[in-house]
Image (cartoon, rainbow, N blue to C red; front, side, top):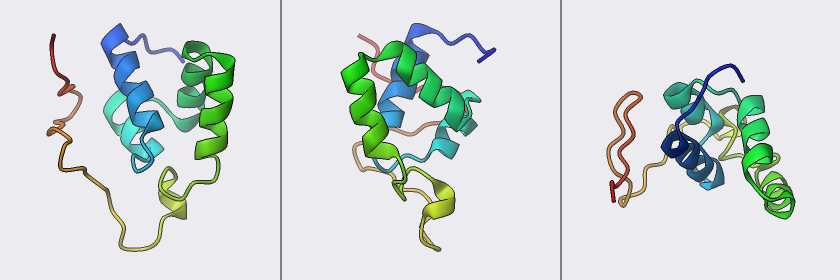
Length: 94
């Protein structure tokens, strides 16, 4: 992974990776990280037990892999999700 991410960007990538309905392609579009790079990032940032649980959860999940999705399912957007525009992160600032 040759791109350096800010801590808040890493937090957002982790949150998106945990979300069941956010495909890896959405993470790649927003942050430029491939699925393999997201897996590597998750392994670096999570505790081993959390990483194993996450890997088991997303491996082969149709909603995480655009190619496995049924035709006609484009992108899920929760009503609670804020608008994301290009590479800007719409996260609450505390």
